[in-house]
Length: 113
Image 1 (cartoon, helix red, strand yellow):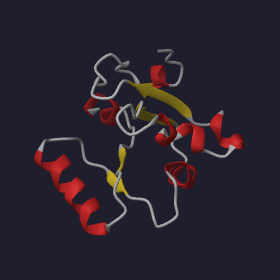
Image 2 (image 1 turned 90 degrees about the vertical axis):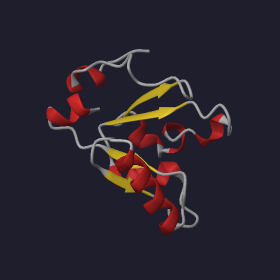
Image 3 (image 1 turned 120 degrees about the vertical axis):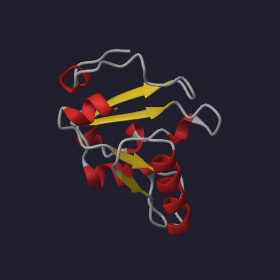
Image 4 (image 1 turned 90 degrees about the horizontal axis):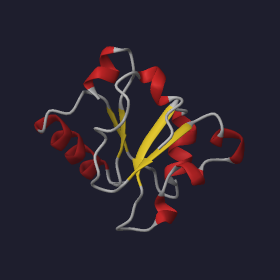
């Protein structure tokens, strides 16, 4: 992630929490464990992950497969249909890490798992 950031990528994190205090706790955990700086985004009441991602319009969305909570929580399928082709989705196995992803940001746009 640091390599991506050094190449100019903005790193944002989607929190599973809606409560601002819990989102702030996520922010502290990321900082404590040395994750690259970035915004931690929480959903508003009634807002889906897809709604949040649609508002932010990332070029690339990397998320896990939500195996423990259900695949219906995966963000990309929740996006409006007109945005699904615009936002590159990379789904990784839950707790599988991202070390296998390309180091170059440009390569993320064409990455095929």
